[in-house]
Length: 417
Image 1 (cartoon, rainbow, N blue to C red):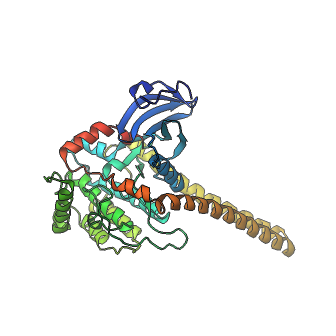
Image 2 (tube, helix red, strand yellow):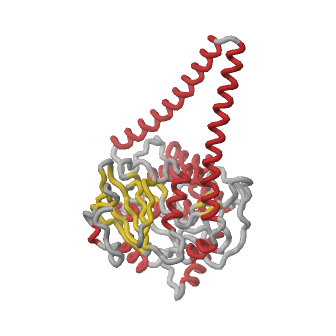
Image 3 (cartoon, rainbow, N blue to C red):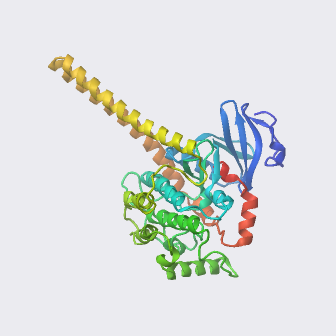
């Protein structure tokens, strides 16, 4: 690392134009918070997000936990991790640079709300991402507009961010879920938290999906009925928000909106703790809004997207699907030709080799995933300290003053993670 800064002001603005790890030049400060600061970094091979975390004596690094789970989840809609490194006075994570958060896009819109088509497209994009995360035995537990952002170079792709409160909700080996115990505090953000989460119950897949429903309602309406509730204490405010969520009907919450939004939230609220959600049904509700209610196409023309970006995104996705089909078809043809050209004994040998090769690949993949599962188990099942930390990090953005403070603190932090 060149020009390594001192421990006293490691997170200051003087870091601009400093070069780290002989490669990454910090060019712009994007945001800050209690964790540290986030910068935009340039390198010979592209732009990145550079996230610092102050080291805390005898405390687990939340940044390390976040980087491990994001590497474990690697896939579409999950920002990629370039590097995680621990230094003397701080930890740093270098990751994919993203565009604006959904909260930022909402604030920039003229009407202070997003169009019906855009919100439906967001639902179509995010439900499969949550399904993927849940299939990897993880729940997010802090679904909110600030924790989703569009791509820096691909504005049609929505990414999910900030896995600081994420948790493994079931064993990857037995698929047995954690017991539904009741905690004393809320984990997550009160404005978007599910009713059961606000009651303090252990969260599962249903809670992520119910929270997403409130996020979509917020983006569609621009305001939720329980925003700005006055209270003397945080506990009193949470109780009032919970009471409002319980007593307001879903129909009233989404008055004058397509019934599919109502169906979505009602379905999520009726899910049992261990029940596997029907993700295809939920995604289909938003597809129905676009194709039948709006009589439109799923063309990824978000409010912030131009036609050329949407066409490029559609083309890329269709080409990926075509290439996969082509590869499978070619593979099948090659196998057929091999069988035709060889004798019965050769066929038997080829089948044995193919079986053994496939077996070895599956074994290596299983060993690799088992390693990651153990890492995630250690972080998210066995760490009592982590649980204490996350209980102390409840977000409450229902107070206007706190909202303003958070925007000053975090600024454009969702531009990067």
